[in-house]
Structures are given as structure tokens and as C-alpha cells.
Image 1 (cartoon, rainbow, N blue to C red):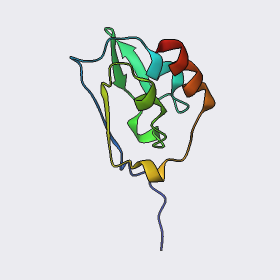
Image 2 (cartoon, rainbow, N blue to C red; image 1 turned 90 degrees about the vertical axis):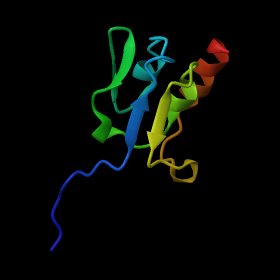
Image 3 (tube, helix red, strand yellow; image 1 turned 180 degrees about the vertical axis):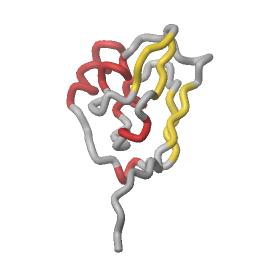
Image 4 (cartoon, one colour; image 1 turned 135 degrees about the vertical axis):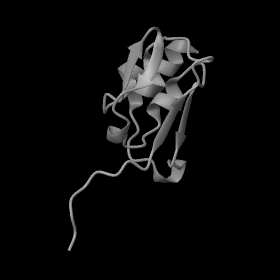
Length: 89
């Protein structure tokens, strides 16, 4: 018998020394995983992360680390990420 339960296999770490509080990850995340608290990105809904890594790609400080996600298993790619990166870079 199968039981419904949510298991988070993705661990999200934010390097607080690297995060510059720009909020791009907060704005870009389709699952609203992040919030800014005291000018630092905080994964407040990590269990909702679907592993698209758009936040990781858009972070200019490379302050985000995702364990349990591999590029070949990404599920979501947003063209807005590319557009935002072009504006930032």
C-alpha cells in the first residue's frame, strides 16, 4: 500500500557571506521558495522546490547551493531567467 507524503530530497543552502540581498531568486522562483529576511535570501518553503535551478542560475553572487538536484533532472526552465541575466550581466 502506498501512502501520500511529501519528502524533500532537495537541500538548499544560502551562503550568507556571499548573498547580496538583490532578491532576484525571490522574484524568479516559480514555487515561491525564498523570502528576503534582513537582506539575506532564506529558503522558507524548501519542500516546494522542484529543482529547476533558475534561482541558482540568476544569482549574481552564486550564493545558492542545491543538494539532490542534477542538471539532467531539471524540470522547469523559464525564458525570463535568460532575459533577467542579460539585464544583470
